[in-house]
Length: 160
Image (cartoon, rainbow, N blue to C red; front, side, top):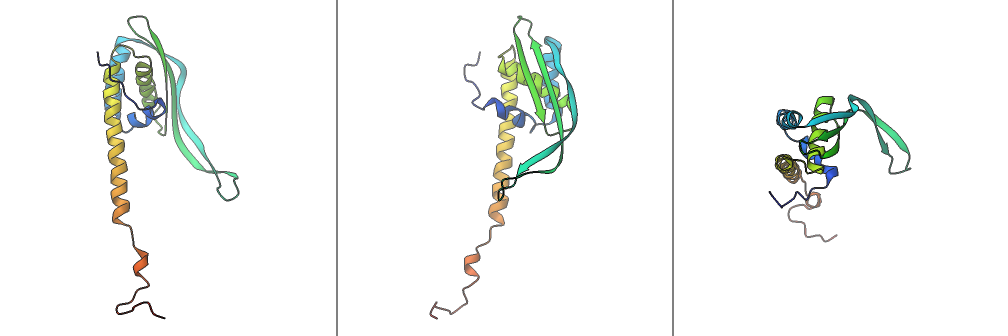
């Protein structure tokens, strides 16, 4: 058994998992559904939520608009009798994907049989997210403009 554990905080798991293709998440969640008893503690839901932000100038709350949101809360009972709860809340309209992420969350948080597979998937998702961050940084660096050169004219020494 692998003694090294993922150091990502649980709050980041859903974000890392949602970076991967939904089919991979579904396949792994299906293996746990087949091997364990999964019970919905609340029905998976999807819909729209209002995105609330706070104005930085006047510190007043305003609503930017609607965003898709899917939520699920499950309980997973492993073959050895251990039980773990998990949740999924994603900015997506697929309630089934939120449920799959909730199953994986429960397995990993409860260290149920097969949690290492979830951790491996989580680490792959973290690598995808890190690559996205690096790509954004490369794009930002490529579009950076040095405005300090605008005021200088060739042959000008700076004497007024």
